Image (tube, rainbow, N blue to C red; front, side, top):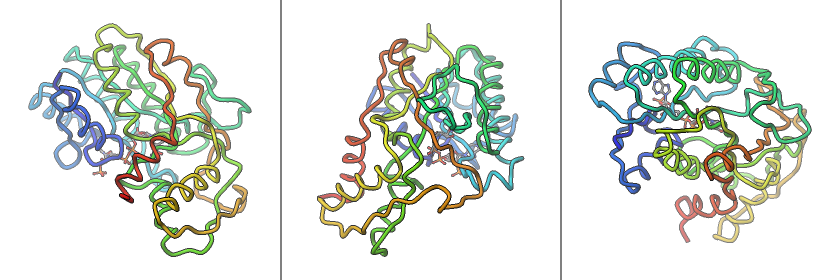
Length: 289
Ligand SMILES: NC(=O)c1ccc[n+]([C@@H]2O[C@H](COP(=O)([O-])OP(=O)(O)OC[C@H]3O[C@@H](n4cnc5c(N)ncnc54)[C@H](OP(=O)(O)O)[C@@H]3O)[C@@H](O)[C@H]2O)c1
């Protein structure tokens, strides 16, 4: 298939562009200035120029704190963008796979979130991503949205890379121990979309949760990062557990980012991947032995 990957240098897009050709697909990655998904003319031109068989939208405005002060841009990229992509793919009768986030929920449930749980974003980023899901599925029924959380990879900005950077300069690192979720490696999310491609002719379509496993806290993830990095010879700092209240951020962080991934396992045979294996793969690239 000829697959148009929206976002080119993003974490998930980078993995898609590496892995799609290995799976026998022809992949084209676009981001600004070649393609701006907030601009109808730019979307139309990209579709006409590349004539894809499927689209994977891995583009987003992901700066959660910045979004609080720039909600208009967050909505343009995360809500208008998916709507325009939905309209364009529906008009061409081609399927689209999209990524969304646990930030569509308030994060206050005391169990993993299922797809049908009530949404209730507490910040601008979550509101914009929820609006994007709704607009995209309204524009095009042949859509799969993968809601995920805690995305990490050897590329771009993420928690894993921040911990490795802090290890270089700090004797002690304090990490929140009262936010629960599961790291999700971008290569696993790319593989999930690639596994979905042949299934996009028949579905089932809709919103599916897909994160890593098992559940942990940011502190638990940091401990695993430092343990694995230490094995590879990195000097690692002491790790101190702190509470969310001790680490104020512009946007509220959900205390519970755990996602129940049973629906996609039953519908498409795609399971939550063990993030500890993803961590080793990422460190093979970031800290080769
Ligand atoms: N990161 C996480 O922890 C996390 C958690 C849950 C869900 N997600 C979701 O997973 C998906 C991918 O996240 P990610 O971490 O891979 O994202 P990322 O690394 O922040 O990359 C986002 C990409 O989108 C592109 N982009 C921004 N505005 C655009 C526009 N107007 N038109 C076209 N492309 C545009 C960016 O290009 P520029 O670099 O040129 O701006 C960049 O290539 C998103 O849907 C996100 O909401 C992420």
